[in-house]
Image 1 (cartoon, rainbow, N blue to C red):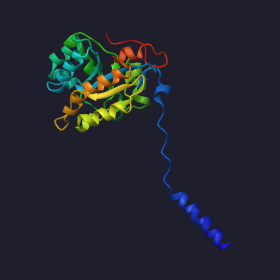
Image 2: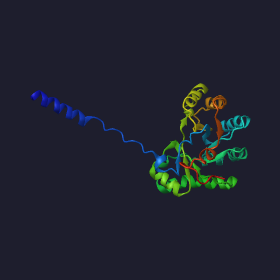
Image 3: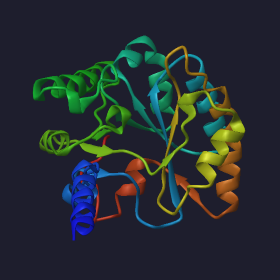
Image 4: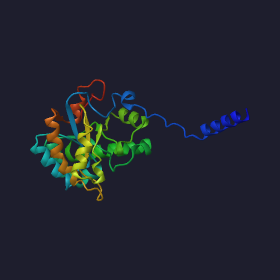
Length: 246
């Protein structure tokens, strides 16, 4: 009996010391279906997206490839970068690509106050209007960092938040082969692919640029077509589909 009691006591202590199970991450696509999306409907269409630009090095190279391949992508731009490279921003728009708002200076929106979040998004929006006279309702949160408060606020402001379903991880200065593997092994119908067209000086995106033609050719051979985020999401009444950026 003493042995049994001792074993039961030990088990009780171990259970007490065991780490608590992590709380499940909410499915924000279900909680905010008219505000948030991370992929499109399950059709053989794909959206290429590029974050953190524009810049004068990688963005022009990407635009050259996309023009050669007759593909329109979606660029989620930073306010700080469009002030530095307004002509590249105009080129993105002129060549038929969709534009999205990626905040002003890549701040983590979850960590900001309501006023801070509003400033990050509306300041970039204001500068896009000033530079080109256009407005976009599409927003991508830096780092993909979202919560219910962020989505509720941005939804009330008339924005649609779009993250991704395939992460190239190219910001880690990967080789072309690594970027290709990260993308091509994860693509499914309706995928939204994340790459970058600019970054901080420590981020070498040469591999990502070099991988882009192979990604395009391989996915075309698999029967996929390439569309912008507004085109990808618009037909799906279960997810973000309301107003588009002009």
